[in-house]
Amino acid sequence: MIKSTILTLFLLLTGSITLAQSSEVDAYLVRVVMTNGGRLQGVLADVDETALLIDNAPNGSWQWRSGGRVPLALVRKIVLKRASNHRYTLQGAIIGGLLTGLVVVRSARKSPFRSPTLYGINLVMGIGGGAATGALLGHAVSGSGRRVIRPLKRDQADQNENLRRRLLPFTYRYQQEQLNYPQP
Image (cartoon, rainbow, N blue to C red; front, top):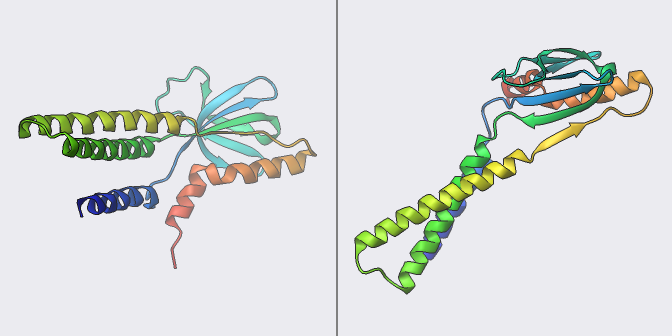
């Protein structure tokens, strides 16, 4: 009975965290390497037929020039990375804490503690350690989610249009429009 209840609680909690629709706009940090050797970085704000618009970096601590307008014809490579990865850290902490707590409870059944105080301390320390480990693993996994986009080697008009289409879903303006789109 307890085993099925814990499993059901675990599935409901992780399912609600992973499947919940976010109500905020995902901002993407972008690093642009141009064909003339220039480098630019900031938040990917918008892209049109001829240029890429980059807003200033949120913390302003980057060593490259931050913010500006880059013609698509000058782009050699673009590196995209999600600005906020806190969701993965939180999910890792919850899952790690639950799994470690489950292991502590199961091991306490096989060899019980001498006092309830020791059991409580062991349970709290186990859940805390599992949550910290899960948060670190979630943070490490979230940092590996970067995407590199390079323009195709075709004629210039087709190259610009292809690059624009590939970058459009990552722009702040596009995501804001999708969030405000009336649902049927």
